[in-house]
Image (cartoon, rainbow, N blue to C red; front, side, top):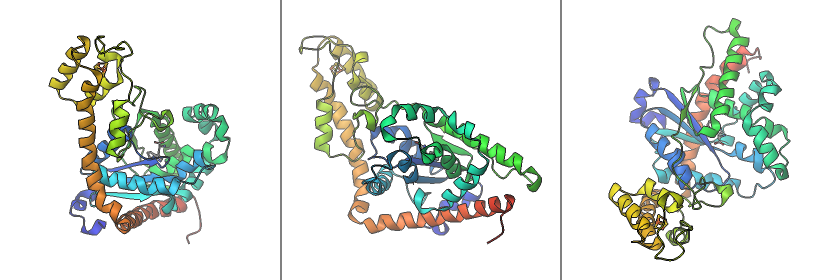
Length: 347
Ligand code: TRP
Ligand code: SF4
């Protein structure tokens, strides 16, 4: 588990780094799996990866409701292990356990113009959408500075994220450039390379209602949700409203179940759906059966892989501790450089 006994780490000196995080605001769902996690699992064998549970970022919006943040954090680590992230091949850690992130946020905050933060689209949007959450806070405005610190800390080449995060990566690059330029005189070469967003292909995974799968739309299937509950959710999910009676033909394009078939079914099954739906040859429950089977099969693997860790929380704690240690080490190196360049007295 430690980097020293990691055989693949021999190449880590040369393989470029990747950093990404997920906010701990709820149990991970199939949207997160198909949108981010599966991609991370692929990346772990090609790059030196740092993945973290962004619990401070969760607090930026959830500071009034903190009851379950710790639980979400441990559940998320279990989800990662279940999905196939392997602590032998990547480093995973908890953001709030690597205090260096806070220090770098503070230091980068010194040079980040307010106007850059105020124009970040997610800031403007969320603030008006989530009025009831009182987001006119220093912490929420600073969200992208913290994210920049998370990223620049590890000087990664790539940051795998969804489309919604592109403006944050763009800001990270601006902060890096600004820093490098400000302290040009003290630097042999730019201290922070500009990281690139590695766009996760737009999530094909729809929610139960056909909208994007998202916790705030209440249309999710949990990554390790109980099979009975998953079956019930799919059985009761809406279909093409034109199919009132079993004998009414339907149109797959108007049905969220079809979107699931596009993710989960073979070409043959898809042809069976298209034909059967349009001719009323099959019923909706019949049509949902292969989807239910495929989702449960996918989840069985994830649940089984997570099981030993669910049974033995000490194992998880060790993994996180070890990951934090590795992260702290890398972070410490960057911070020593930053402190020096910013003219602070050596400790
Ligand atoms: N803001 C990201 C999101 O909401 C989470 C995040 C925090 C992140 N720090 C990061 C993602 C650093 C990539 C890199 O999804
Ligand atoms: Fe949707 Fe399938 Fe029913 Fe057609 S048959 S409406 S695709 S669930």
